Length: 122
Picture 1 (tube, rainbow, N blue to C red):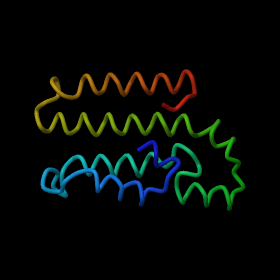
Picture 2: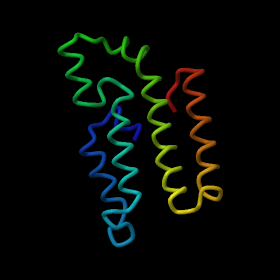
Picture 3: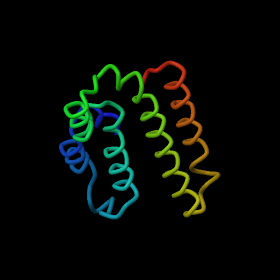
Picture 4: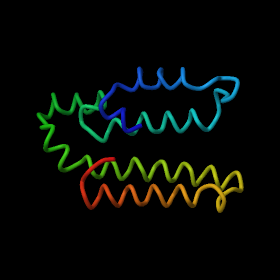
């Protein structure tokens, strides 16, 4: 997902499609939903990571460094919050909230706090 901030989403998702066997992960599996969420939202962390960001740079003359300072941290926090929400929703619906999601959510919160305090995207 974070790689989509630097690499176009289409080849990134195509690469992940080759990593997982369709017999093991069906086309409607939660893995593919999470990959789509990460690829779609990860591109907003940097202005060059999405077609709309590149259009913003061209039409509104938004500078890369301005975007990095003003928007990237919020986009990264939103990215990790979206992943945590997705995982929590799936854990709640499957009944595995206490066993599966709490440790993962704690890691997501720690990463978001690190990004907010240091400004460094992991």
